[in-house]
Image (tube, rainbow, N blue to C red):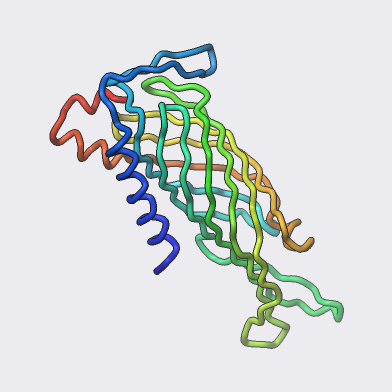
Length: 230
């Protein structure tokens, strides 16, 4: 079973358990956001909500602007706490040329994939806007391959398990009650990485997110008041 299948199945099991046992009508609470405390209550808010996001990144690796494709699935609790798991991978391997000790040019190729657990704290929200801080704790693999001058095939130069840590701040704009898009900036730290890889991959990240509220769309078929939740 592939890692994304494990992630998604685990998410569905946890979501079903929590939503079936913890979702209540008539509850109310008070949460902190920028500007002070805000009262939240049903039916405009739900104590537990599922979350699915396309969660891409752009970063600089070995001088290249690289796209990191990914998605995350999780749960939202009392509107301001989000947590779950994400899976990320370079959209394509990164290639560069290096000069060896003999002055010959060699081709080098980098790949990077990782899974993470995340926690996101919503600092401000309204019907149209949202500001949040996010922490990712990852477990992944960096592979560096090298092709000597005149050779046809790449050889594995380094295959390293790494533990990326990423912090970021981002903003969301809600275009409709079911579609949102956002952007942000952060930094990725690499734990347990050799120096040559650490220098290449520890860098600022630029975040792009799209959220399609699939479960909300499905629920709206049977209950039009779902459109008023936020």
